[in-house]
Every structure is written in C-alpha cells, then in structure tokens.
Length: 390
Length: 142
Image (tube, rainbow over all chains, first blue to last red; front, side):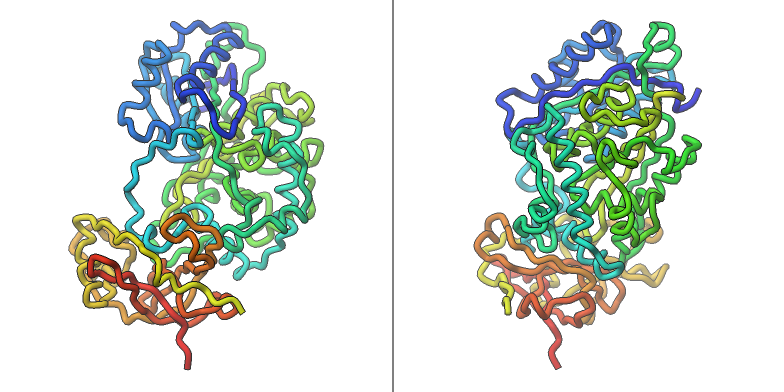
C-alpha cells in the first residue's frame, strides 16, 4: 500500500461569484450532486468525507458533522482539515491515507466557502495581540514586508511579476467558472499602475475574496480499475511543512517551507520540476508564485525574475501556469480557494481543459499556502504531484 | 517628501493579553520592552510564547531590551481598515533588535524617502487608553 494506490475519479466546481445568494451547504450540495452524476458512484457508497475549513463555518466546532448531515451522508471517516489555503490539497493527501488504511473506500473531498457573503470569524480571534494595534491589514501587509525584503536581498523586476498577472488573467478569460468581474484581459502596465494597498503590494498582486466550492471523489486505484474508470488522476507524491524556520528569532522570509515540502513530494514521486506538464501554484499574491518557482527548484533562489522572463506561462507555453486563471484571476473562494488550482490540475490531466487544454497532460504540480504568521512568510506549505499515467 | 502618519491620533483598541503575555503588557506601563530569554540556550525570542521556541521547555526569563535596532523590512499601508482608515500612509516594519529578535511595530517621525532596510532606529512609545503603551520605533538621527 502506498500513496499512489489511490485515484481521483471525479472533480466538480461551482462558478466563483462575488457574493453568493446560496448558503455554503447549498454549494456543497451542488458539488456532491455533480460528482454523483459524473462518476455514477451512488451517495450510499460515499463512506468518507474530508472538508477544508471555511470562514463561513468559523462559528461552528462541528463543521464536518453539520455538512455531512446536510448532505445526508453516512460516513466511516469524517473530518475537517484546518491548515488554511493548504487544506484542499492536504485533504486529498489525507483521503489517500484514510483509503490506504482501510478506514473507508470512497472519499468526498469537499471545499466550500462563502466568505464574501458570510464571513463568520469571531471579532477577537487568536493571534492578533501583536499585530492588530499596528494597523496591520493581514496578508497584504505580510506580503508587503516579504516583498520589500526580497527586493533588498535579490532585486526585483515588477514587470516580471506583471507578466504572471497578465498570463493568469488571459486564462480566466477562457474559464467560464471564473468570477465574471475578473474575466477581462490586462496588460503589464495595468498591473504596474494598479493602486498601492500595502506598498509595494498593489491591488493586482492580491486575490479578491469570493464565494464558491469545488471537490473531488477519491477511491482506491484497485477499486477504480474494478469499476472501469478510464479517466483517473493518481496522486504520485506529496509534501507538507508547517512552521518553516520556527525556531529562529530573525527569519529569512525569502526561504519558504516549499523547499522542504517540494523535495519530499518530488522524491516520493520520483520526478523533477522539468517533468511537470503544468504548474498550479497557490496564488494569494503574485510574488508567492515566483517564490515557489525558486523553492521548488524551477530556478535558483533569487533568480525568479529571470526565470519568469525566460519562460512562457500561457496554456500553450512551455510551463502552463494556473490555466484557469488561478485564484487571483478566477476569484478566491475563501478557505476553499486552494481547491480552485487543484481542480484545474485534475481537469487538465483528465483532458477536459477545453479551450485552455495543455499539451502535456501526463503530470501536474499543485501547491498550497496556508496562514500568515507573525514576521515569517506563511505557516504551511504543501506540494502535490499528480499524474494521469502512473 | 511624504511624511508618514505617526498614528498617534488613531483610536486603537489595546490588545487583550493572554495568561502568559500579561507581564509584557504590564511592563509597558513603565515603558519597558520585555523580551523572553531562554537561559539554557542563551537566546532571546519575540513574540511572547508559553515555551521556548528553541527547546520546548518553560522557565523563560523576561529581560528588558536596550531599545535599539535596525529596519529588517517594512511596508507602507496605503489602505487600512477602521480605526486606521483615514490615517494612511503609515509604516509597519519588522525591526531587528540588537538582542537578535525581530519585532513588528509602527515606524513614526519618518518620511517614506528616509525609510529603508538597515535604517538605525530606537524605541519610542504610543499611549493606549488602558494605561499601557504600544512599542514603536523612530529613526536615530545624529
């Protein structure tokens, strides 16, 4: 038994919208129904469910149980993963573990959040003691500190960052499920001229919080073969690291946990960055993608801007990047947003990319970023390597 | 030249301490910036935690920082939420204290042209309405 003994047999997503008029459980229901119809797996056969945490459910300590009840699911394995934007990718990893250990057979990985219309986080959360009195805006401020430091250590070409913003926006134009407000092409000048939020972080560096849901149906590879599924996606390798460099009092914020998580994922998959057919990095901020290119080994640390200038990230390019637009151009469905790039990777490997289908559908690389801590870059880094042909 | 807002007019809520962070906030009443010091490893840490980040054990000492350091990184808030809304632009920085820890704070009495990584700064204090003070930093000018 091993990680790659599991198979994704179906994916689903809702359209991402600025504000949903539907409750978060209704979005979850749309994903469940879609997966039942597309895979033919009946509701009663789904015996495991793993959710990502959500801003809308922040008032409930019984979140996975409530969702399972609303969806009418009887389960042998039921949990929520709560490592921020890493949760959707991490839920897939945990699904393979649950299947591998024999606890359950068919797992629904469900990512649903309506943060834009129902942000139910408490008014006095943990962890703000050291930042709230400073006017710290959260993620944009954290990435402002990170970006300034990166520029100091290595230099930074903002036009290169703009190239990533432009490539993703062009992909969102081709994605019917992307938030309509964002489905307009932009130029590098639009990026550079967008207003400053937390200087040097601009508006077009940031994600826009939206509402939406996505999900996967995962089973054992043997079961998938027995049931005759021909389109499957295999999770080949996974790595996860929380609190990179936690035991240092002055942290080099340009070095991230993806270095550790990426090495683990590539080692487990027996592959290297140049083997990847498409790249779906977690994108809460544009510069986060460049840092991942460096940490995952596409280029050396400090050479991200050169790498961006030298490569083509369109769906027809040599390294297709977030071919659905990513969260920055499709909209961030709250804490479910990590599912957007994951589902896009699976869609490409299943050959269902439509107008934005990539040529190499053998492998895809998907990542997560979760949590913005005090004075470091981010809390959790996750890396998943997927294959259509393992 | 863009003078950055010193945020002294912001009606900020005093932070709510946890059981193990009360000594830090109490000491600010006397304008003392206390760091946690791990004697076993001879290292400081900040922010305040219930154990040493170096070995996971307790018995941390509270030691007063000298109050000087240099800018490690910074961001200029040009958009903010209440109660900071309307006070932009203002600066938030990570400051490396000479004790070897980074602390996040507002940088005041400073222009955007002057603010840079490596700028020497010293501790100053912003009053909070419960009698405690918030540590901030300002440029050291010879």
